[in-house]
Image (cartoon, rainbow, N blue to C red; front, top):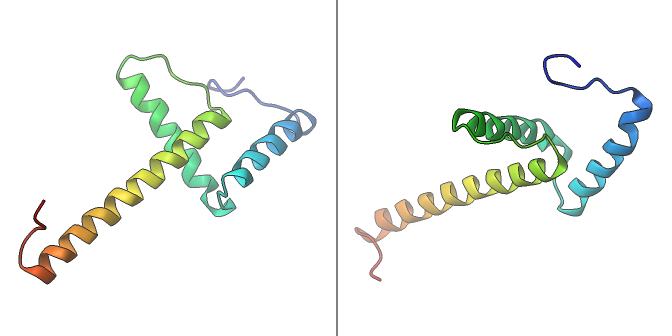
Length: 96
């Protein structure tokens, strides 16, 4: 173990990597997003540590949760952009 990370042999990692790839494919996560998912998953773990909560394992479930969080951020950014665009085009916010 190096700084809390288990070092696995290639034979040990293949089944895990295959499972993770199948799950990423299942929810249509492009391979180019994998580094971003890892970054977000580590951010989630860091936030738990800072809040004194039990830190979740770096698992496929955490990686999928990271993907959901990234998509939520994108949607909220897009929705905010749409709101600002509407205000600019209509000289004011929408009426409820």
